[in-house]
Image 1: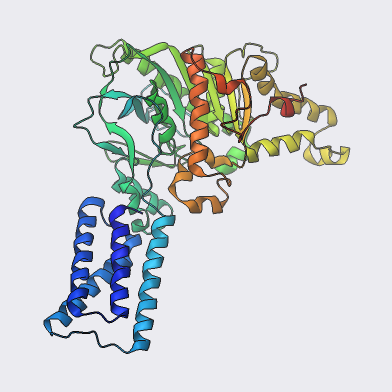
Image 2: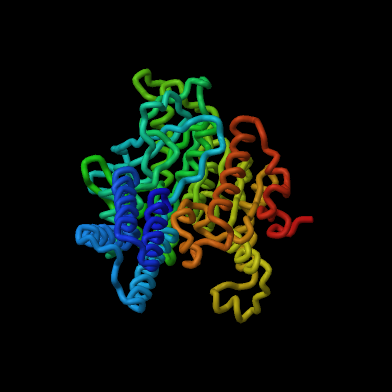
Length: 498
């Protein structure tokens, strides 16, 4: 709850106390005036939001009633005692409802980055004119892509903090329309600011900064990974987050055009060919963006001219974006290291058991839920009848299981890690866990505190890229750490290694 919202509620509770005690009219009028001033300041400084509707109404009602009583020169508010009780209880309930709504649907504060740099952010619109036509491309084979970049910044004095949702009025309206919910219910999200400054000057503290590509999950958005991007940027990285058109919940373009999520989840779950097509589309997006930044680094007219360390490029992502990160790290020589945040690899199309070239540093960070599920599946004993129902012979099943483990074994053998974080679920790797404490009760996140989960993920992601792109740090990757008892190194248990 914001400061003037809290002051408004406290002033109204005091007003009810005065009403209950039947204090003089001028005292009630004075406190009503103070509440009104607080309300006006709140509107100007913080902005209204629907969760505070009841306190707004109560403030206006008290001002009108107290002004009327004062003008009538009545020294007391002559209300029957029983009615006074009823009015006070009713008003308290209204205010408590508003307070509750303000807490469970807050104008939340984004966690502050832990690095020494201020962070800037810029949004770019690109068109890949050479995109191959596939099941979802436009007829002219051109693919429009929106990206957001976070980077170390300087001279931020005259810059404004970026909203977590750029073009929030349009974006939230489109989301409300998509899910058939009243637009005003999401309106308050426009007040949450990030820690980054729009179009700030890039820092000159270093000659260049490693480049990291960040991928959202299927059906989500780059907007759910701001804390991860900001934290890396604050430690001296250029982070590029791609909104994969048609695969994100909503993509807005500068000309007012927008696209929705258009991936068929039924086909995704039943057709390997379809899933491969989606993944290939993401891979092309990523390669195209990396090409653009390598080109920008040598372009004297570019904002990033000379600032991109093209010899140290990393990639990571959440869910489907994590699987794409593995695919690119495995197949594109430009990537030195990568991370998969709770993404399954059964969609990975390029990794082959007979290919031993997966020798790059990689880290898998699973949710507790995902890790335990995988462990259960691997350790479960299936009867011949069970396997027959699943369409497997025992030989086929054992071969499939070995192939599923192959990427993790390759990762472990080449200095990588397979971790999981206790009490987490899939969306503990996104900023969704910060939006409301109610998220936990939907089953999308685990019992761990959202800010704590965000901090843990950010520290391990940072330590990994520091080690492999900057040749510093890396202590968190060596094994269990007392500062992070929630993090479990799962190499031995899931790979059955001694």
